[in-house]
Amino acid sequence: MNATQLIFQPILPWAALAALFVLLVGGCIALAVLTPARRGRWILRAAALLVLGTAFTRPGVPLQTVSQTAAAAADVFVLVDTTASMVAEDQGGGQTRLAGVKEDMTELLEQVPGARVSMIAFGSSAAVRVPLTTDHSAFASAIETIGPEVTLYSGGSSVTEARDLLLERLADAEEQNPANARLVYYFGDGEQTARSEPQSMAEIGPHIDGGAVFGYGTTTGGPMKETRSYYSADEEADYIEDPSTGDRALSVIDEDNLRTIAGDLGVDYHHRTTGTPLSAVHTAPQFDEILVDTEGFGGITEYFWIPLLAVFAWIVVEATFAMRRVRALARLHSTITEGTP
Figure 1: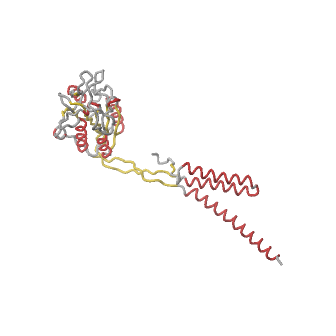
Figure 2: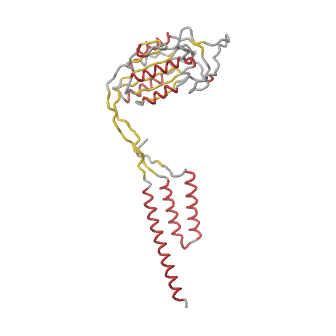
Figure 3: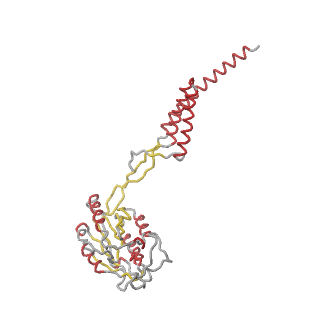
């Protein structure tokens, strides 16, 4: 948020505040029309009420603080397959592939302390779930909530669906922090259901300094339950059927595709199984820490007191008018009293 941008925090909802002051100011204007002798005073009161209404909106300017924090000189991009096949139950112990992915991503996050991390999920389309950030708690929350595509809306998908989006994000990261190392980690099962062939990922290789491709699933395959919500699993859901046989459909890992992706990126490929920690097959490189400027929200400087000064001036004027009336009434009362026999 721009530090010079004016914001408002009204003491009442906008509709209620507007209705109140329309009524009050409208009353003053009506009285100004009906009492020509006091028109100036009523116009002054209407203006004072408008100023008071401005004060009630509590105008202010947000303040931003800049602090320096230590961060690793690395940008880590995590690509996550969220196609329906990732809920295939062949990861071991009845777990889905996606459950294994979540465990590995959590461990990977622990291996890159201080690094900027980003998550790109892909299925029939690709989307940035977490933009580059040093807020690892936000990334951890995204790991917990990520789920597969809703079966009803999923269609053919490519294992390289995230390619173009990743290239864009890498270019942005390189422009922002050219000295940072860039790592790419790919989590998926390699199953290509789109009619087209996977795109080459070789163009990405020269832009990165490392990473890995992790594969999930088995060659015998696993059955998949229908998914109806991105954020939660439905235990009562039916298994997806193979329309040609009527039996449960099986998803099979395609390690050839995964090895091709790893070769294009210039990184290693690892097949993952439940019960084996990620550190047994891969350890992320460590990077020197650098000081980076971090902008934060430092509160709001409020300026409601400025229009209130004008309101106080109005009160002084009203008090002066009132004192004059009181004195005039006192003199009138004295005159009447003295003239009474």
